[in-house]
Length: 189
Image (cartoon, rainbow, N blue to C red; front, side):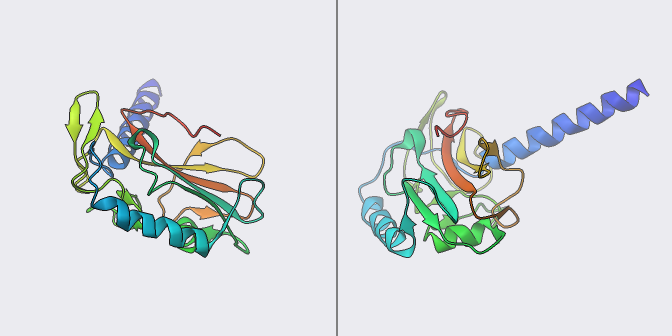
């Protein structure tokens, strides 16, 4: 019985580590923003604003937040309220918010490698070990777009499903937060 508990705990730890590595692989680091990527991302951000109503307060639908974190790339950042009638898959909610997602090679519809073009393939991402660039090849383990969910009356929790299976209901919030070296550890609000 004790051996079974140890094996179960070990298997759970290995599965959690695998999920973290997979999520981390979604974004290969890049640190210096090229000027060529800013115009394309800016147009995405402006069309995003017209596709859904911006919301600073309560949202009757799903509140969508994109925070580029330490990358500080405003072209990716957005906060908007998306109207939904009932449980809706996260990828559909992001589509309604006009947030453009590029997946990874291994998980093209589950994880976000780039959000509104960020980080660009030629962008150097600074991390504790130096710099890296996002190749969307599932090998990056130092930076990635983390997916967070917040219930209507609750706190942020790390999503346990991918963009193509996670369902969101009216009153919930969804945040894509760019994380480098596990920072920030959770959304600010």
